[in-house]
Image 1 (tube, protein in one colour):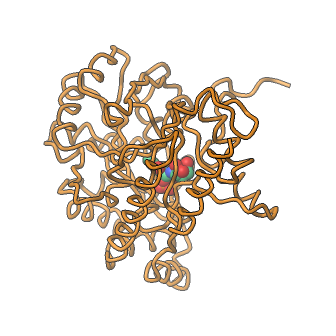
Image 2 (cartoon, helix red, strand yellow):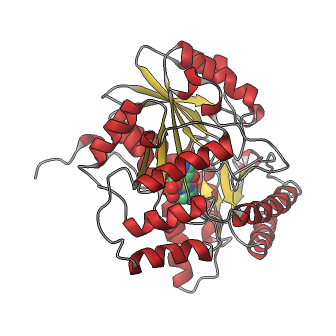
Image 3 (cartoon, helix red, strand yellow):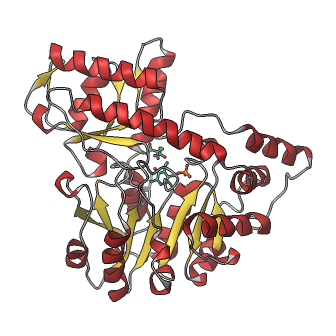
Length: 398
Ligand code: PMP
Ligand code: GLU
């Protein structure tokens, strides 16, 4: 039989989703494993949002809608961005699609021709690199080491640019590092992007989850020259605990981007479910108290996880400022034998920690950071306590 697509045959399944699937299977098999894998809030979708979805079904909102979303929903996105971030995106520059993940994919194929470069700071969320490749682009990785608080500098960005560079992907606050670029740091990167006429794919899906009063600045808030190059990616999965509803959006600084994206989506997914859009509308326009309540709980969990991790011999972490992830540095464990396996990198560690320590964490080998594993603290405090007790025991027993 003939070969499958050369480009897409090389794509690896999402390592974040794979860890989660493995953890769930072990659990279903009766193995007492605890999981810090998938980055998905453990809270339930707030009731008023669920009710809006149910009511939409009862009201027969069960048909196709315009591809980019209903007009009230796109207007609600535009209003929420203005209220929360002080940025102005006309409603017809908003494209709603099936989760921020699919919006990102749609942005990639809207912007890229084969061979175009996209700059990606590492550690990066695994799906960016694969999506760039899936759409014929070339990820250009720029290292953002722990010693730089996992952030890249304007000089590093500038040095990575070639005539084939089309865009920068920036995730702020970041998955997996939890770090937040300040307004000044963003401005430095934005200046380089404007000078080299790059698009800025700014994934701000964790913007409601910033801790210790750290202010959040949207990339698009840095003036018109920057805003028009931005494609803001966002959604309701994290802020409103709505991962399964598959609702996300792209806010496009350039109307052409929204048009091409929507045209392409009209031949692939079409619109997302009408009832899901009704729930998303309620999330964006209804009471916002649950967003702050969840943020507060996440911050308590982060504090506990970070302080205990740093008391455990052999591992360490810096203090993340947002999102719900901690990067555990395991450099000191490299070369040691744990659970009968020599640890060469995070893949080895995460494998043996799952099999012998019965704790699922995500290896950051697939995130461009092979000496780190990611702990998601979107789990209960009891689970965090248990996971850390197991880590202590696992490292002591060797
Ligand atoms: N961007 C980042 C940085 C994420 O961590 C996630 C989580 N899966 C997404 C986008 C996608 O979110 P969703 O598709 O659920 O809206
Ligand atoms: N963003 C989450 C994570 O990084 C969800 C899983 C995924 O979509 O990759 O774990």
